[in-house]
Length: 168
Length: 168
Length: 168
Image 1 (cartoon, chains in turn orange, purple, yellow):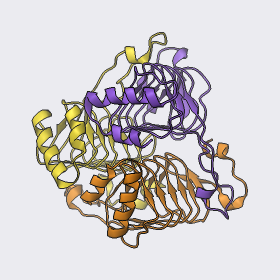
Image 2 (cartoon, chains in turn red, green, purple):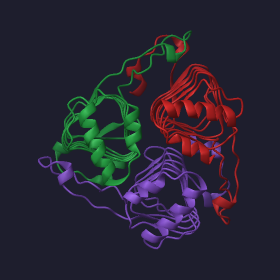
Image 3 (cartoon, chains in turn green, red, brown):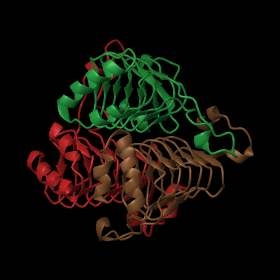
């Protein structure tokens, strides 16, 4: 995906148009009604970005599906799962042990805050607070998670949400 | 702020001079005696950077005031508050619910470490450890905070500081 | 190191070749059999990268030695220690108090996950989970650490490792 790197450098709205057109062509089932920010890079062509997704600048997008209308802040990292490198064998270097790139799924209408790191599936309509490290699947729709490791602190379906409580 | 993206790409001292001149012109009450690093982008013109501020490379600066002499490491994220997107309504997509961009205030003579994420006001002369997520206002001058969520671990006005203690 | 910034912008394999050649020339005892990713910048020439090291994109590499075969994900921050800025004196601005840039050592055959921040030495064959903030030396070979602050959760030499356990 070296072309992904080259086009990440195009600033402003021109960059956003060109990246949307490019990712629709090269990525699996990807819409061109998406916004991909400046300096954001993709590492796998087998990545699916659905209609209405907004990805901020400085992100790093692994092998994943990001469902419709989801919103990623700046410098969000979506990894291709957490088994990219095996390290069970202490007598072989990690780089030679191989690993597995999983296509994780980020649900629709989620908000993932700036600088969050996501290593596993996220259900629909979840919120991941800025700076969180979400390493386990979030199985429930509407969960709000925060911290490192990220923990569920509330659910959007459970009633009104007080942002102040998110971080205490 | 697409010009902010374009000039973030200029390497070396040339980039630092050009960015200082540019931000003095386009941002509210901003000094040109500032240093803004490579690949650092601003997202709002209503941002105020006072004299003597140093901002490292790869940062992301939202709507804020950064007071005199403050020092930001690399990849620091200053957000425009934590209410940028409302999500109370589960029947409307988050992108359509609107939100509020607040102008947060980072005090003077602070040090914010690499990869820290700041979502709320910071008092004068505070230190935010690298990698911290500072989501609540830091009301006391000189507080030293660390962790996710960031907690006060010491105060600079309370006597000598042992860096080793910062992270235990 | 403004040339480090300029060449960080070269996309694809061309960038990887040019950066390897460049860092072998300007950095202390650095191999050209290394891979340094797109948008990754170095801040000190007194940095040593040994043979077989892989450094992902969007990283920030301070003064350090990275030993053979070690693997860094994306947006990893290796700092020049944690004493870069003194702040004991409340009557002088932090920028004027000076500090110490230490050359930290990352051992051989380590894996440092995406978005991790490392401020101190890491022993050989360690694993640092994505998003961790590793602020204290990791003295034992093969330790696996996670969190902010990073804590030892397992050791690679102690038997088989279950990735699922890494983040619970």
